Image 1 (tube, one colour):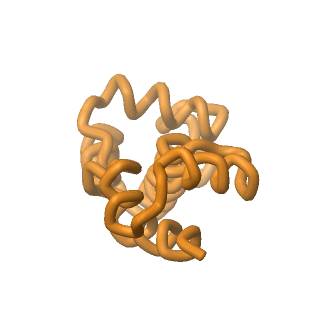
Image 2: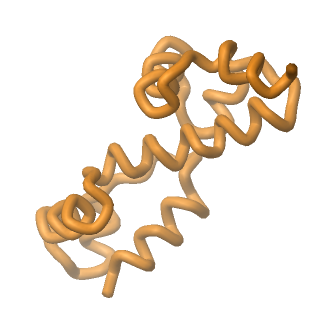
Length: 105
């Protein structure tokens, strides 16, 4: 019953420093229960799910804007450019520059 609320919060506040423990406390559920539910439903931990949403938003910005990868990383809540590149490649399979090139052709 709390997973729809989690999805809504992540999509609304993906830029923020979201913490599973805070969500769990606010919804009076154990963090481990949320983790198990996420792993069962979407095969991801909270941080993996948040990372996926952030990269999904970054992909949209790479397609639709000319903002730099560093700026996009910050806009989606990933402050370190190196970490942004690693996460982007982990979830998208290619680096941000190559992703943008695919959509500029």
